[in-house]
Image (cartoon, rainbow, N blue to C red; front, side, top):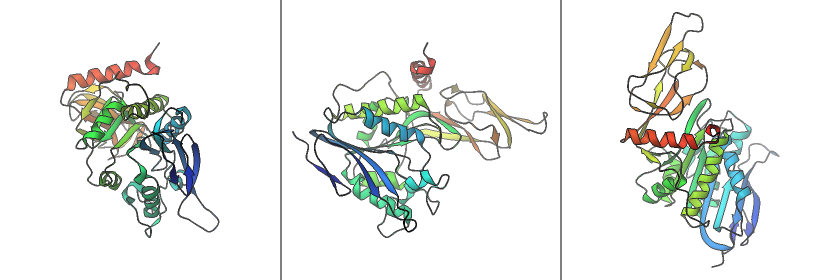
Length: 338
């Protein structure tokens, strides 16, 4: 069946067309407009609408690259339905880094937005009305925060069965449960009945080629699972489900040395790093794991202050199987292949 036309930002996009649009954003000052880049691939055949967006905080460069590459490799003559890709949702955050919004609030907390609200609420309102309400499925592309490297994983609400199925199809090594509590963006997608995934990998302000390649192939796997692309999804990875992740924080400041790597299995009480005093060789605090689990996040900066998060550890019901999955995924990465 032929795909109908779609209207975005007063532009009409016909079946088989690829469009690059620029949505006007709330103004800051006179004669200094900003525009959100929107890339639309509108297939010839009718199918679902998938919205893929990144850079909600302004620093997720991996996600920006994934969205752009996805557009480059997607053929409008092959797909069924529509892909709406937004490499930079928060243009203000990207151009004014490290500030996220004029008010310094989180854009995710501004959803569903308000036409008459503050800058972030107006931006969230535009995105919700013009883009999100057109979506049948939605994927957000994130990274860890600055100097926090995150093992590639997909976050979703396990109570949403469709989202959980698509998270498995994505083929990231870990799938982590999240609740709707305290996250207005997740709640908005839930209210709109849009299955919502968050792919998170790497760290802010840095490119990670493995994480980028996995992100592109993961989105394509989801597209196959919802019949936007031909062929069955890849099933090389049987992901593991994590119900809980906890950060281990530093109890003193100093120079941080890690003894573990991302994806490594650790036991409760195991020494995983140390913090030394940069002005004395006699003061050392050894860091030990507070639980059995797998390291899914590491602070990459060598200078640590008291109370800073340094290790993120995921817990699993089947600890041994989780270790096997992570080890198998690691062996598949290009950096580990001869």
